[in-house]
Length: 294
Image (tube, rainbow, N blue to C red; front, side, top):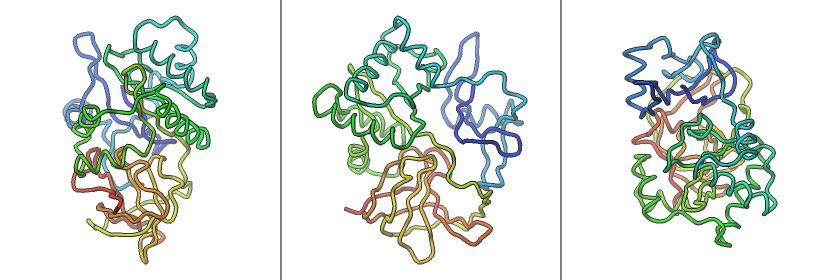
């Protein structure tokens, strides 16, 4: 089972990432390197070089898809049922608290293990929102509910666990400082939940990119309107480079308009000569980062 990571198709394929494989009659979740190795050794037809991104990706041909799990109908189903376990009970509590605080849940869905019915007792709750204004409203509601102790902020141990899982190129203190102001994750009934924005791609022009090599730069952020998109994008005040783009979740929502950032990543140029710096040439993006200069 693959997680879809990009809207639309490329060469008749859905860009995605392998998440679960069936072994001995049970679904098992794979880490990044294990998933890459599993496909290379067993199903190389699902590895694809994307001309648009100039990178090797996981991608499934449309004709190979046998089922598409949809987050919005799954959430509606779970909210209308008696909870089958503590995870679903906490999901229902989370949505009820958001609704009571005035949040718009029409554009909300549930993904991750709950979408697939594979949640465990300690599973997180992964929510997706399909409308930009509703997503920003939900972030505000999370902040307000933390202030009223309906939700709980992540504690040091929670941040450390997330930091170790991400293996990002920031110090722990830097990581926590950036994350605490995003309000896209918190705890409900001692269970962590995440909120992600899913929108159609901004660029419909069919751009393709050529990699020009590694680069480190400092610049001011002129526009953070797409900071929580996938990929996250930050328009920069820079003589040559138009924007910084991140395909790594760590750097989504990382910087705000008016802040000065230091960015390490790969310089790319499209067929029109427009340049951008990309953070996240792999999931962990080691050696690549977006850091607000405080």
